[in-house]
Amino acid sequence: MALYRFRVTFEDYDDVVREIDVKSNQTFEDLHRAIHQSTGYNSEYPSSFYISNDQWTKGEEITYLPNQKRIDRGVALMNKVKLLSYIDDPHQKFYYTFNFDRPFDFHVELMKIILDETPGVTYPAVIKSTGEAPKQFGNVLNVPIAAPEGDDFDFLNEMAIGEEDAEDFSEISETVEEDDAVAKVDDEEEDEFGSEFSDDENFEDDSKLPHGDDY
Image 1 (cartoon, rainbow, N blue to C red):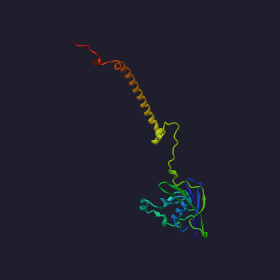
Image 2: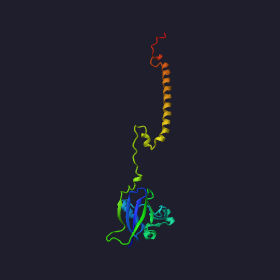
Image 3: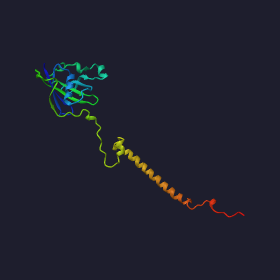
């Protein structure tokens, strides 16, 4: 049985390379699982291979764990399609997207066709692995943002408000401070004048003063 040797690279990580040998009569699902055996990813996520040209343009789709839209369109399933059905070129290319919700995109290129299997090897087989694959969900981790010097924007960070948005708050804050200052002056003036007319300290109630007899 002939073997296909594929070179698999991340679209955004050129230094991560895998070479995988797969039997020609094995399926796209076998290749899908072999890729993630080599990356350490959980392969149980909706994914698709696309028949591609030299410019990595997506063509016909072959999918895994399809959504209803793909089912309605009648997209071919990976476990039903053998690799040999789509190998028309000695350098056949497939564009591969893994996990549509948080995708990694790959370029999968046929490097050569090997006529004889190696005795004792279980296929698919990863024969070369270069570079460490990025973390499977590393592109969605919430990285803590370092607090700026001082506490001016601490409450804004908690509210997920940036410094640009904070300009609006600073304008409001300045207006409030001005209003508070005016109100304070008014209170001081009221206290000043009020004290002049306040005889509470020196005033004695007539009812408490002694009175002589009326007769």
